[in-house]
Image (tube, rainbow, N blue to C red; front, side, top):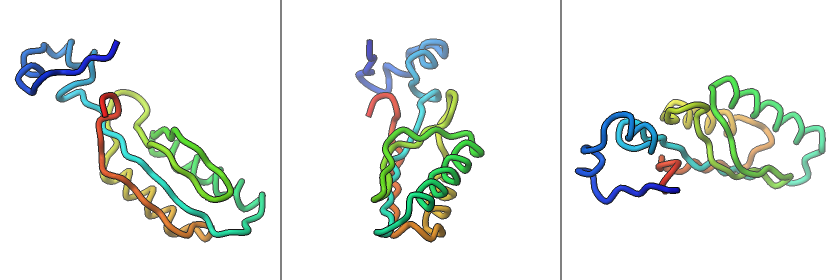
Length: 118
């Protein structure tokens, strides 16, 4: 069952336990979309290394990535493991790492959005 609040005043009327249960207000979980494009003609070994290094960075920051990865690049949503939001620092770190990676041609990171209701 999804719970969509009608207004901010309705969210304020919920007690903290209810807000936490429905991930609303101060318990809202913000995520962001991440997309990158690789250079053409990368070898299987280069792609494996890129993916392994990216997974290592994501896990080291306590994040999760849901999406896809192919020879052309990757696209997905980044969220924090557990009940909290991703941060500007998380987004900046991933974008910086991808931009500095030799196999990556272009990187796009989206704005933060509610991971449960948007």
